[in-house]
Image (cartoon, rainbow, N blue to C red; front, top):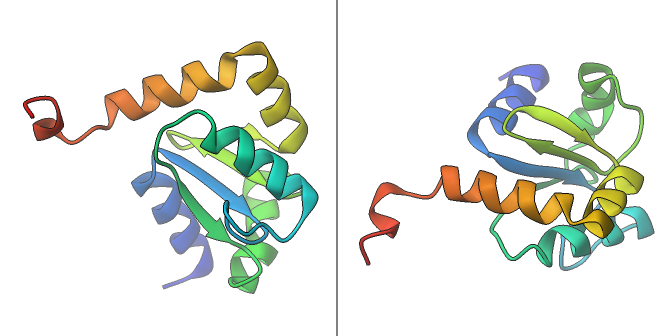
Length: 114
């Protein structure tokens, strides 16, 4: 699969997705750590891609997104932004709302009946 197709597939299949250095629990840079922490504290599941393990994505995504830096947060196929934007939205309470509403929309159908 071409790198660009892989990126598009990841963005399509994961309603809340962060491209970062490392993982949310073991970030490899300060910006990724802050962004991951903000996302985790929203309390909803999200996907991540460690760009250090995926050099092809690390090379291609900035061109595709027209956004030069990492982390990058994508919600429902749209680029939300990087660390500064994520933290600003978190401080205003906007990130929590966006994440919770998106997660609610994409919950498996049988999750409500339990």
